[in-house]
Image (cartoon, rainbow, N blue to C red; front, side, top):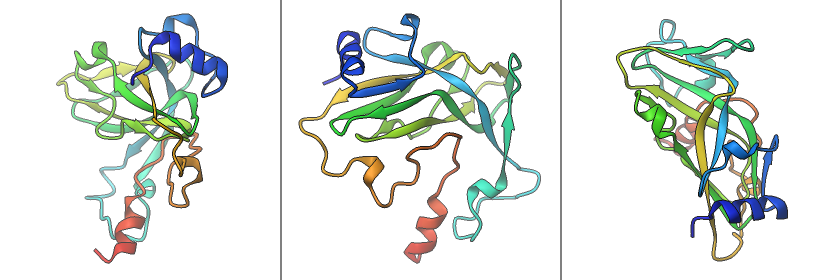
Length: 193
């Protein structure tokens, strides 16, 4: 069951959904809450690395550079480019609530995709959300830290999970404070593939 704005506010008051900093009223929709774009981006260094090798001993993060946008300035997302970004807000979910990250229609209408596949936030999640930003447009788009970039919807599980994300021994992204690159390399290396 997707929670309404009434239930989202109730879950926040009860501590089942924790969002910091506290959200102003304009960030609440009828069944969602908007999160804002943070100031830190991870950008692939295309000119130095010809491809991503999932068996390489280095991490994907090693072929990316971090860009921190100064206050008031934009991050310009070039046409057909892909970068990782982070939300300004931190999200913590109880063991019986899941979150879904969704793009915003207003951004989609100018070619900005907020996530490729990573839209599900497991019960027990804690941290900031990494955004998989793509520009499908033929025009560059200036994105400003602090702007509303995505929305979250929430669902109530039938019962608390037996293994919340933050307690999974193999969780890769719990507690993230900056946009983290894929950690798939360690899985592929360890699997013999």
